Amino acid sequence: MRGNVDTRLRKLTEGGYEAIVLALAGLRRLGRASEAQALLDVRRFVPAPGQGMLALETRTGEARTVSVLEHAPSRVRLDCERAVVARLGTSCHTPVGASSEIADGTLTVFAYVGLPDGSEWITDSVTGDRGDPIGLGVALAERMLAAGAEDVLRRAETT
Image (cartoon, rainbow, N blue to C red):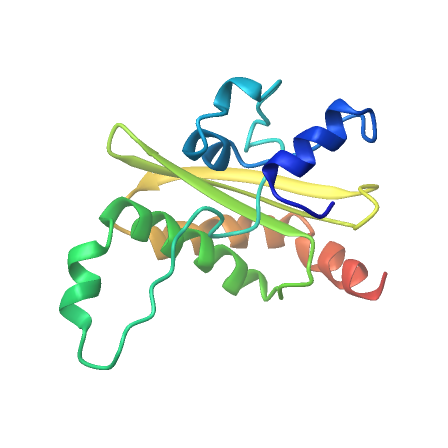
């Protein structure tokens, strides 16, 4: 669907769609969070890795600027999610999702791989030390590979 939030919500109201998916963070920024009718559980609707992360590009020699702006918990989550997809050997065209959350000092990462038509999928999650996000992401990927993710991913690439 094309258009900004106003356009998209208008098309929904006019009956052009039964439902649309928008980022709650964006609705919140616009002061329109109350218009969300339902929230998708990220454990069931696993987003692409790194969703919601903000990337900064700076000139050479501006590392201090980036370090001041970096949010350490977000970096932990991003490193973990990237480790999952790196170990799975996926691309931006692969039906894979990975997301994570930090609570009570621990890191939980959950992931999804599946066929594009949704006929087959594998999901899993692990919880561990937030001090080793890459190790935790790799551990989750290893579990998924042991459960047959490599075969699902290979078939997904050919469909």
